[in-house]
Structure formats: structure tokens, C-alpha cells
Length: 594
Image (tube, rainbow, N blue to C red; front, side, top):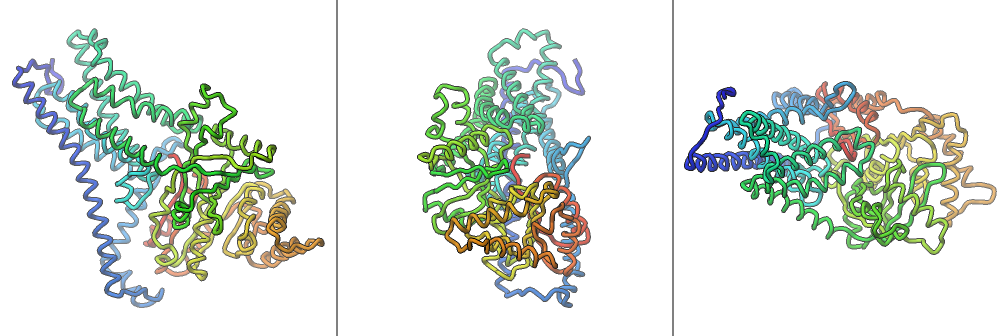
């Protein structure tokens, strides 16, 4: 049978040996080409660091904005190319939207298509007219990418994240790209083999253990990809996560049974997976925590006490997050043999560290109950703790810190203006950054915009020792978007702040001096500043962004956002208009999932 220049051949044992050697050679080429790509990125990073180091050693200075020096730099040929490069990078970072669904970003599509083309080239070289050689090549080249594919998914021991100076969440997007590339090759591998079985009347071989193991591996991979779809992840992230873990550990064993020559690649993949798992377990601590439900909201405030040896890692990286799980000691109400009890062994939810207490070192996290098993259990534990005064501390497993915050540049030193935008509990990311920037440089030009649905959503931030400073800060703009007709909104914040001052022993007279002070603060700010009282509306992101960039063309600007995807997408659109004009911008969107 002719199949675009390929035929079913009957090679001799010597020819089969040559084919085996050629298959192994090109599989190695495919794996090494991925490492070459990573090495190229590393060398590029080293070149950037060296250039920055030379600039510092020469004593380069920052010219005054709008000075002739900066204008000359802006019009230089190098700066023109840099501006074009920034616009290209920004274009590549835009979403690909089809029928209202976001299907990744443009850089993922460009990289995915390019890498698929390269691997397909490696699949056809030196295959001659041998149909089975092409079929086997597709399979082994795909599997050769699995060590890198698993490496890109690691949380703790992720060298690619270190090379890119990024977080494992951002590197994980390339894990998803490579997974789609390898799955495409494996589907072609299976399709060609099924065609071979049909054409040669060998469908009975589907029951052979070797072939059946391959089919089961493909079924597991299809199940994994199906549960990775956005609608299914939103419906049950637990289902997605459990299937990901189970299939990710079992599928390599099935593939080894199916094709023994792939053993080296798959053992490498499993090795990096279990090494990372061991490092994560070693870095996990059991923290004694207190939890309380915030009245009038679906929020849960968690305060966890961790060993002092680990506190400094969180203090040094504001805006980082942890993975939280509920250990067996806190699940006494569940039967040890129940499915729910066993499933909690596989549940690790990310939460941003909203604050680190300077005196006790306690971590503060805020969780929103969205109907999932983890937040539901946390809400139940918070309710049980409030009913049982003897159960004031609950053990929780905390792993971290993680996140891009540890890779951020010095925002207050390297940028002239910083804009932090948060929606809802996204302020757990932006508020620590704001406090860190203003503590390092009180005169820093930094603004924080926080949109919340109801006043109660901000009560976790306006309690504590820094509450008064937060509420009186003219550079923090809080927008209440839903209870705009609720006159109790500002009063709720006021009551929480006053109650907290009483709890801390602060002076609040019986005649309500504390509340009078807050009311005066609202009144003064209404004359020209933003406050929760004034901004009982949705933030005008376009106006905010335009005001940020209009201060000077030479100013370096950083924009960081953590909130709903719609908010981040709208903000990026307005920032992109200024990038197209040549403005250099540091853009970061913090978020979990994809």
C-alpha cells in the first residue's frame, strides 16, 4: 500500500537493528534540542545581567525626566529597536480569543506551532519509505519530551523558573503548551498504528498486553486533557487535580510496558517528579492556626503561626503565596476510611499571604468560600472554632513560599511610578507589595486601586495595627461596586476599625471619638481624595492608566494586577495603548490556574 511515499516494509533483522538505532538517535536529538533551547534562554539572561552590571560599574545615572539626555536616548537607533521589541513582546502576550473563549496567549501559539514543526521534522528525517519507522518515530520523539514536560510542572525544584526569573505558575503555561504538542504527536502515532492494523488485518493485536498498555496510556492522557478544559476545571478543580496526579504517575509505567526503549525518558520524568515531591514535603510545616468567618461576607480569615526559622522567607518576599492543606489531625470528624478523608490527602489550595505580623511572625491569609471542598472545610472549621472555645488552634499544613514576588525587581528603585490594581481578595497580593514599597521609600510614587463588591470584603484589611494608616492613605483608592445603595457600607468599615482599636487597647472614648475621627477623615478626603465613601462606583481604569502615564514620557512604569480576568484584560488593554506608543512597562498579572 502506498501512503504518501511510505509503504509497509518487511525489514530484515539487520535493518530492524539499524531502524532501532536511528529511532534512538532522533529521540535523543529531540530531547537535546529542548535543552539547547533552555540553555539559549539562560545565556540570554546572563547577557542581560552582565549588561546591567557593567552599567552600574560605570556609574550610570538616571537623567532627569524630559531632559535633553533622555530625549537623545529615546531617539537613538538602539532605543527605536528596543521600543519595537517591547511592542512585539506585548503583542505576543495578548490573549487568543475564539468564540468568546480564551485559548492561551499568542506567544504560546507561536512557540507551540514552531516546536511542533521542529519535532515533526525530526520525525520524518531518515525514515525513507518505511511506514512503521515513521509511526514509531512519532511515538518516541513525543516521549523524549516528557522529562522537560514534567520539569516545567514542578513547584519547588524548577530550574526553568529560576532561569526565567519567574514563578512556577508562569512556567506552567509552557508545560501546557508542550503537553499539547506531545499529545498531538502521540495521537498521530496511534492513528498510524490503527491504520496499519486495519490495512494488514491485525486488529486482534489490540488485545495484546503490549498494545493494550499503549491504548490505556492514551485513554489516561485523553482523560487528563479532557479534565484540563476550562469549564471542567471550574466545575471541579479537585477532579482535574486528582486525575492529573494519578495519570501523571501511572501513565509512564504503562508506556514503558508498551515500548521498552522509552524507559530512560520516562524514568527521568518520574525522577524529577518525585524529587520535587520530596522537596515539597520537606519544606511543609504544620502551623497552628486560628480561623474566623468575616460577618456579612463569604470570606474566612486565617492566622497561622509558623516556625520563626521560616518567617523571614515570607517577610523578604511580600506578595508570595503558600499551598495549604488540612492534615488528618484537623479532620477528626471524618472517618479515616471515608472517600472524603482520602481525597483531602490530594488537596492543596493556593492562598496569598496577606500580612506577616512583625511581632509574632504569624501569617495572615484570606480565603473566599466558592463552594469547593477546601474552602467549605475551612468555613466549617472556623464555625467549629467559634462554637468551641477550647478549640482555639487548628493544625494546618503550609508549603511555601512560592510566587513571582521573589523574582520581582526593586520596584521602588527601578521604576518611577507603580500602579497596583486588585479586585476582591486580590488585595492580599497588592497590599503587602504596597506596604513594602512605602516602607522602603515613603516618597515612592505608588498607587493602589482596590475594587470590592461590598464594604465587608475590606474588613480583613482595616483591622490590625496598620488599619488607621491604611484608611488615611491618600494613595489607596477603594471602590465599592455592589452595595452602592447600602448606607451601612462605610459604617461597617468604621465599626470594624473601632472594634479593633478597642481590642488593641487603643483609646476610643465612650462618646465615639474614634468614629468621629474616621468620619472626619472621610469628610476631608471628599474634597479632593479617593476614599471608600467617595468611590462607591466601579473604578475608571482607563482614566487611572492615562493619569499614570501622562506625567512624563521618560518615566519607568510598573503595573501589577491581581483580580478577575475581566478586570485584568481591561487593564491590559489600556496599558497596551501606551506600550504601542513606545513606553517601557513592567506588566505582571498575578493569578492561579489558567
